[in-house]
Image 1 (cartoon, rainbow, N blue to C red):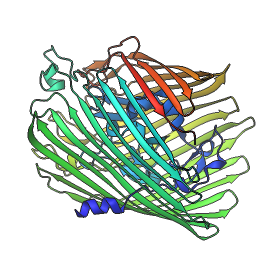
Image 2: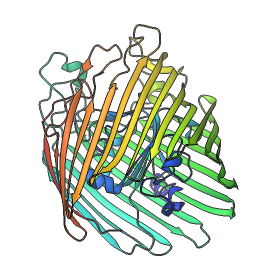
Image 3: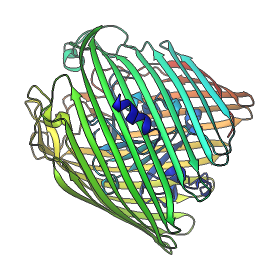
Image 4: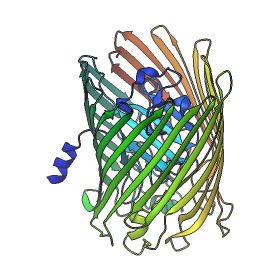
Length: 615
């Protein structure tokens, strides 16, 4: 009961973003907050960023967050058998635990495994997503080696009046999804309430009929593996005439996943994020923000209908941030973060709690054509002591919207509870934090009808946690990751084009048996092309997503073939605020795997009816 009351008290998100004046941004340069923890336009960020809006989501018609993000620069997924199944995200070739996920400013990931359940976040409850590539530990602390992804849930609009919305989707594999929302606001307040559900009978998660199937799927179950999800969201806020603002968000996602396993084959999951923030200006040049948040994560595991076990984690968070305007185009940010982690399980861990406190400082300045961003942070972890990180970035603006940037940053990742204390001899309490150093060079240009960006980088990771020959986690590895990313956006003859390209070398660099081998499940080449156009009330579009060869294991014995998939979509705005959408996914029914011996959905057709009043 106390935990439930705490979650209710923390209703809402820690978003300083909502306190920013977003009217200052143009369509080509939206306001973002993730890159610097302050409101800046995307073209001011001295890092590689991608912003996905609600309009993009409705245009692309994704069924999940991985479906939406796959193919973005430096970003790939490994999925174990279809929608709702366990999914790992790899950003810039770093490990799946090296990307920090924030939902409305609240840190989200399992305390035990360190993984964020992207597959459990309902895409219909999302307003926008910001992807920031490159190390961000100097601002956020642990886990931000590859970058930070922040998801903002849907919200109302001050002065927008009462606005209901809903959508219903049906399609292949008996998929049925529904969402309903109610938002509104006046000159000072805003709110949003949302409820949704999704069901699919799924596909057979494992590819069967081979002797090696035991190694990948653990058992031979030639059945469909269903996925169910129910979700609720709420957000609200109030802004006073003096600029002070109180905000809050809450997101709850309940899932049930069937899969193939020898001693368990079904899980019931809970993902819950809650938070609140209050910001005000004690002085005209000083803005301060106080925020609290909580993330709950629970898995109840079953073999058929028999309860097998559970694992539950809770992360409480608090932060105090101060933004000081020192002069025109010069901003100093100082802050402190605290988080307390707790884990509970039927198996029992040697330790179940730890705390972390971090203090940080950041300077942002513009001097003519030059931009400078400097940041430093010191974290004190209850298990690992003090850890220092820093970052420096510089940008130079040429004529015609051309900009050159260079940056360097360090980051770290603290071992998870599973790494340290997993029972049955699978944990290693002697593990040390992983440490990284990254350097990056970027060139970009913004014009009215087109924009492009090119970024090259190298990341070295020391004390990399890997399993030895006895499947025991140790700090035995190093990695050297090199990559080049490109983005291109343009409007040509009425067509909206967005293209992404990644070249990646994620190599083991430990000098041992696997030296020079590819890090698992990270393709060396990825590309994505989105093409859309409107003809009056009608819209048409297509996406092509390609990934090169990768390997499922550290020794590179199990190759995963490259693949290319294509999607087609159309929409019909048949009445004010009403739209009919259709999507044909994986048009050529391409068979591919992102995890060895786990299937991916084939060709699928989906139809959506949407009511969404214009804001």
